[in-house]
Image (cartoon, one colour):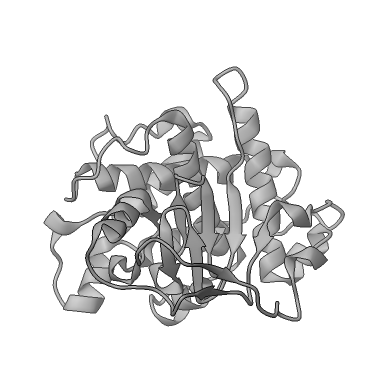
Length: 286
């Protein structure tokens, strides 16, 4: 998927915190009430909960990289730069979901923060090792763009622009769940547990946006290759595939995000239906 070259981007839509660091010696790892609160509040794409830290600390100013999101101005920039592409995806998601909420309640855009190494949130401090995540306490999506490299080098994903946008659309889906009061619907593990159903619904919401992305005015029509990029990304972060790679065996009773097949299926359901009404994973046979 490519962006319309002449579409305008709003650099102020995403907070660029790259080049900053958490003061106070980094991220604590281990038990304690702070860690439990953070784990309960944060919704991850597929990270390592052991890397989540305690509350407290803060961001200390540091030098920002040579390229910043403030330089992103047009769709052509989004076609050429990864951070500008993320910004464009966020604005397209804003356009779709704000329209979808018309007549159905109050819509509020999530904040979006790009960081590297570590970040301080209302849910606590976190390192890049957790992967992209959504904190409902401050209604903010946090992402280290290095995760996209990990998708390819660590998880074996094909990668590509639409795979990257799928990641953002999934986290945005958690924000939609939060607005609809669905985010706390279930946290029990297992192949058909509440946690998996929550994640699959976010995948479905990502697909719904994908099916309507062209209508937002930011993007050119999807190609089969681009759809395959997103499906591939969904596949490589399935619980079964990650468990097989990391521990040599698959334990469905401990799943929290869904299998590769489940994640691909629900993204495809949303993509083809083009409506959030098709994404009731809590009532469906998953």
